[in-house]
Length: 166
Image 1 (cartoon, rainbow, N blue to C red):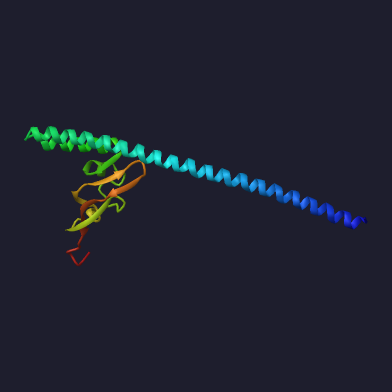
Image 2 (image 1 turned 180 degrees about the horizontal axis):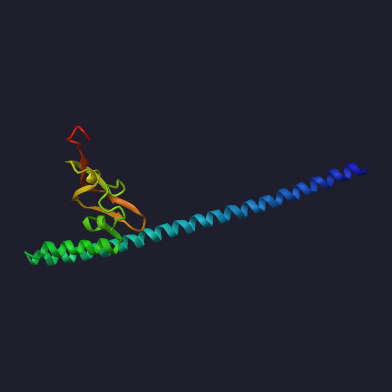
């Protein structure tokens, strides 16, 4: 056998060894990936179950308050409302109301991340332009995901220049 034939045979042997190594690595990687998928599926199911349980526990508290409220005519709605507020607070949901608005850095400035302007109220006071006049319906904000679930419905001041000289 000459030197060139010897080199060709060595190359063939090396290639077959390399291919076998890649096959083993591929099979291992595939098995690892399938295990990862199974673990993630179990984790997702666990998170769903835990979230459902957490929400149901909060709703049970509201149910109990509603049941008690049915027995006390005057205080009933107050008990139910307070139970809902506690449930939302326990789930890290903030009510977008006057208190929420006052805690914002921008105070009464209209911010489309939290508010939906549904009524424009005219004003001649230029400093009020694009500020919130009143909150007509509360909104809800999830602090954990930093997401507005429902925008608060607001009346917004709109500056109108009645004096044509300005």
